[in-house]
Amino acid sequence: MSGLRAKVDMDAVVDRHGLAVYRLCRSLAFSREDAEDLFQDTFLKASERPEKLADDPLRRLYSTALGLWRSRKRKMARRQRVAPTVPLPETPLPGGEDPEETVLAREETARVRALVTALPEKYRLPLTLYYCAEMKVNDIALALSLPEGTVKRRLYTARKMVEKGLAEDE
Image (tube, rainbow, N blue to C red):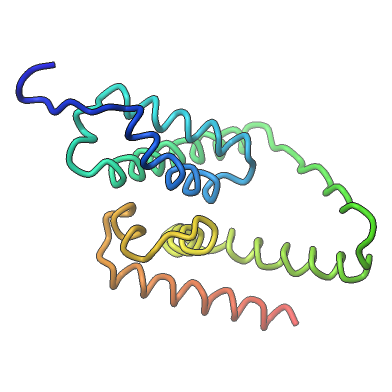
């Protein structure tokens, strides 16, 4: 490496930030396999230009993961327009639980998931990162390159939109 480029130990970056990046990937992707692929692709892309990780590695990794996820989402949308797929039915939970409670919990989860999925991306992303990836507001602001106040406002608006949707369903 040249003297102008900072040397970055990728193993140390993975050890230090891997869990946070994986949680982000897991919250963006709807399956474990997709999240693992996104996680690997994020670090693979980051390893191509390690000098970019010298200043703020977590922010760069979050931005890379979000960019890859958006790209995949656009690709899947194009595929859906060409050849739509039908989701498989959910598998039943193991025995021992009250079937009625299980059904009600699944319906509630499905309603909330549908409402969150229907949100515009600018509201859905902060909400998903906050609740699913358990990221703090300042980390979300860094990942999305937004001011913290904007993230807080979008979280508030997204919550109100979901609440309104749940109230309309009842």
